[in-house]
Image (cartoon, rainbow, N blue to C red):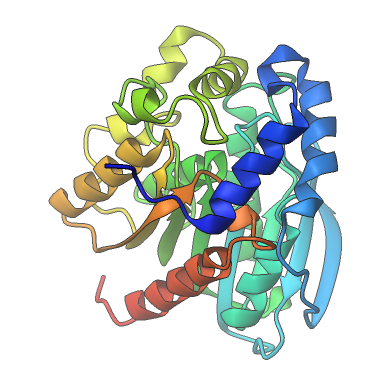
Length: 317
């Protein structure tokens, strides 16, 4: 039986195939960034007007970090929700612009303040440099909560793909005080197991956008040595326990090499007592939330994440 593939997802795959794009791993990281930045805007959803957008720089352990701060239309001036959004891109590509549409959707739909950091990328800055930038940004959000109109008890973290990896790791770090406490984690097709041994790497390793070869290229640029691959701050699924993590929303795509590890991580969280809302889009491909121009499910996924986030507020600690 042929597996169902969403019409918009199929169109994206067909256009990409017709364009005969060079695989990212065939070039340098700089060339990959140029190609990604050039092609991304053609797929992204509408960049909605928000109440305000501001770029700011803060100090970090590895140097300055540029942040983009979005205030959604209707967001309260004090004690509102705050969201730290971490963009995807395999820890190697992606920028403040590559996920601007998603940040705007979150800001308006959740009537909240969203902060997206331009965290350091590999291979120039290998693990844990990017993660440290994200943790520093979260600390800034809690310290500057009054200034930015956020209740420090209502801050969530979100991210897609490698950004989902960083978000999941921050959520685990928040249990022990290595990062500020979080109200929720909202993960879109997260990378949770850098060993890359799940069966979905075989089923969807080629022909569905993100390939197994590209994922290996991303990972090998990110880690310092093979030892990092099994460090839970690279592979949160390998943590001894995930108990005590904040409530989680996890979205997975059916035709995605990361689908098995995303679903397994949702199950692991549930088994360790974490409240989980899981949504699965069987006809979708990796990265579909960044393809809102052609895939309506992109915005629906953000809406579902926000609904889950709101629902978590009624759950006792």
